[in-house]
Amino acid sequence: MVTPTKPAASSPRKRSEKDDADKRWVYQFNEIDQVEKLVDSWDKVRSLLGGKGSGLFDMTRSGVPVPPGLTVTTEACNAYLARGNKFPDNMWDQVLVALKGIEDKTGKKFGDPKNPLLVSVRSGAKFSMPGMMDTVLNLGMTDAIAEAMVKLTDDARFVYDAYRRLVHMFGSVVMGMDDEVFEEYLTEVKKKRGFSSDVELNADDWFGITQEYKKRFAEHVGEPFPQDPLRQLHLA
Image (cartoon, helix red, strand yellow):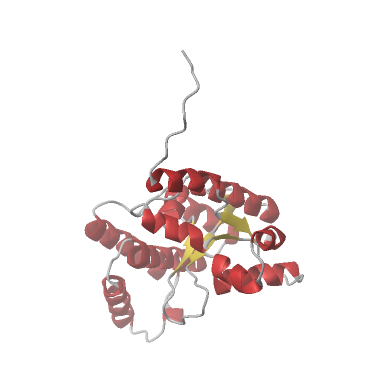
């Protein structure tokens, strides 16, 4: 039986979560016009998208050749913290929709060994804070994709240099590992080889370094380095 009832006042928590479900948390770089409809000044655009994000949106609108990308709003960060470090409703779904937009624009696919798309995640804020913002490069790289990229590029040195950077950054920024866990091993390898610079290391060196980085990651984190690109992105 369904009967009309007097609406009960919901708790602040429930109202907040209902509001969250209707919010737009993610915008692609070419959607600045939609952002400006929500706020009445550029200062508020910067508050919503961050200084770095708003700059990329503005350059995209101006015709500057900016690679396609997306920004997760500062409101999403506030909601994440308010929920005890949990994504607000629909945010991840919105990320996936925007990621599909990036795939369409680049002609590449995230997680596809045949035509892989790699992405970077960078934190931002309304005001510039050099040295304070974290970055994770080359998300989407896995063992299978690295092998495929070697065949696609014929440049194993480049591929495994990129892969070891991801393992290092992901370990330190996302999983809280000490940078020294990775840096001490790289220094050790260069010392054994009699090298003073990273550029002197060859493809075999970088492959071996990548394997050791993944081993150290597993030892410190308690699980292997993620081989699911979407899980990498979700955690980052």
